[in-house]
Length: 552
Image 1 (tube, helix red, strand yellow):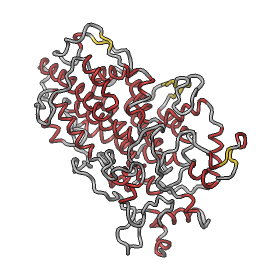
Image 2: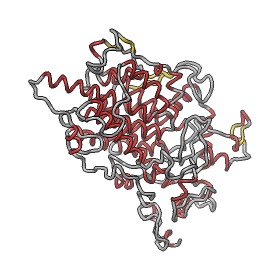
Image 3: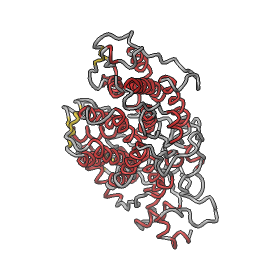
Image 4: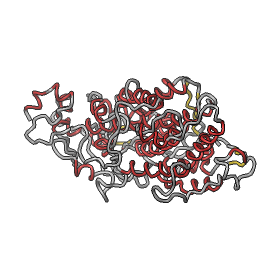
C-alpha cells in the first residue's frame, strides 16, 4: 500500500480496498484478507466534524497539521535520492537517508520502496496519536486492521533508524521535542493556569503594554489619532485582550494565541522577513464600517452562511480540497510529491499565521462586535428585529483577537498560490451538505456548492467569505491576501521547497530547534529603554511621523 493509499484509507476519502499482497509491509499480512475495506468511522461526517483537529481554532489547526505533515515529509525525504528534510538540515538528512540503490538493482529499489511505505505508515499513526489525542481510538483501530504494532521502540534510541519502525519513532520523538518549544504556548508555559488572556500581558512590558482595561499604548494611539482627529478615537477603536473561555464555543482553545505573534518559531521564513513584512494601518471610518458589517450580516442567506462557515475552518477545507484534487491527479504526481504538496500548503499557512498575527498585535484593530456593542449600545441597529447595538453579534463567533489583517484570507492566498503552481488550474466543486452548520441549526436548508475553475477564483471566494462572517471590516481580507500570495508567503514557501527537493540548504535555516524561545518580542515593537523616544522604531509609521513621537 502506497503512502497516499494509506493516508486515504485512514480518512476514508474513498472506499479503499487493500489486497493481501499490497499491504504496508510483507510481514503484517496476517490480519488481512483479500479486498479488505479500510474505511474507518472517521469517514462519518458527524464524527470528523465534532472532535479532534476539526474543533480547534484555525491557528491551532495549522500548527498541529504542520507538525504532522512535516514528519510525513521527512519520512519520505529520507527515502528520496536528493531531498533535504523539513528543517533544512543537509547533513542530518544524509545521515538518515536510505541508501540509494543503483538503477539495475531492482531488488534494492523494491526494498527501499517498502521501507518508505512502512516508515510513512508508522510515522503517520504516531504523529496523529500524539498531536490529535481525540483520535487515539481511530489510530489504534487502523493499526490493528493493518497488522501494525504501535507499542514498539518506546524510548529514544530503543530501535535502529535502519529499520522502518525505528526511523518512524525517531521522527516521532523529534517532532514531539521540537514542537514542544515552538513558542505557541501549547502547554501554557508562558502563563500557567490562566488561558486566553492575562498571561500574554504579564510579560509584554514597556511602552506597548497591553491593558485588559481597554487602553492602547502611546504608539497605537498616535496611529489611530493620525487617522481621525476625534479626541477619544484611540480609546474607542483600540483592541485589547478579551478574557474568553472557549468552553461551549464553536472551537476549542486552551491558551491565548498572541504568543504566536511574539515568539512563535519560524522554520522557513525567519524573523527578519516576518518583521519587515507589513501592511498599512487601515484608516477606517469606523461608524460607516460598522454599518456595513451590520447590513451585510443581516442579509446573509443559506449560501453565504454556508460559505462563511466552511472557510472559517481552515484545516477542514484545506485538507478536503487537497485530498480530492490529488485523487483527480493520481498519476500526475509521485508519492513524495503528493505528500510534499500537503506539507507545503500547511507550512505556508503556518508561516503566514506568524506574520498575520505579528501584524494583528502590532496594529491592534478592534473587532466589529466589540465596536458595535460599545459604540452603538443603545441604538437600534437592525430595525426589523429591534436589535440594539449591545445585543448585536456576528454570524461566526468573534474570536478574542485583533481584527486586521485576516489570517484566514492569508491562508487562502498562500494555499491558492501553491496549489496553482503544483496542481494547476482545475474545475472543482465541493458540496456543503444540507443542515451541516455547527452555528445555526437547519442551515443550509439544501446542499450548497462551492465551484471554481481557477485558483484565483478560489481565493476570491474565500476572501469574500471573510466579509460575510461579521468578524472583519472591509480591508482585512485584502491585507491578508497581500501578505501571503506571490511574492509573499506562498511564493517564498513554494520556492523554498523546490530548493529542499534538490537537496540544497536554503539561505535561511532555523536554529536552536530544541530551545524554548525567550519571552520577548521578536520585532521589538516597543522600546525596553524608557529614555528612548522611539517606542516603534522599526515601524514605517513611526519613522514618517517622528515629530509626533518626539513630543511624547
